[in-house]
Amino acid sequence: MSNTDTKKLDRAGIEAIFNRSQFIRGMNLEILEVDHEASRFAVRMPLQASLERGAAGSGQFHGGAIAALIDVVGDFAIGMLVGGGVPTMNLRVDYLRPAMGPYCEGVAVVRKAGRSAAVVDIDVMSADGKLVAIGRGTYVPVTG
Image 1: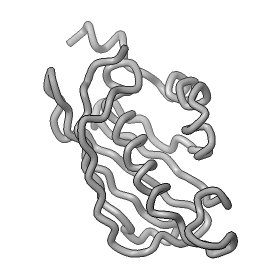
Image 2: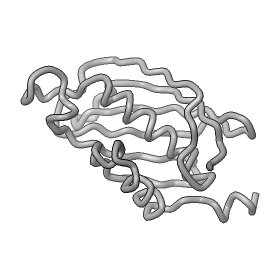
Image 3: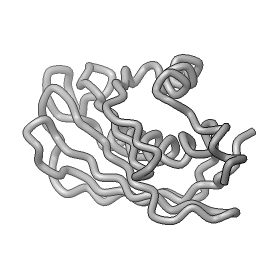
């Protein structure tokens, strides 16, 4: 696996990719964890008016923002291992309760990384530590 070891992204590499994407940059993600050995990646997304459900000041994240968080975190859980963002094949989101508070955190773990598909599970927690959504993404584990 030495071939892929040279392609792995560290925090700075992921931040550089985040900054090149206008969409991801608009989410204002803060990287919390990059753990290649555990195939685990975590970020924090602050609540901002553009991500709120309903009227500004509701304090609740829009479901679309949660789905986008799940996709980005899942993508980069495998992407950090292969050297860049990867295409999404499928995405599932289960919303468990409203996401309230100043931020949400997404934690992704790669469950299986094959040659043609990678399966990643993603948990989203609100600032008070409550599980607000669960996602599963399937990604094509190649960059380019």
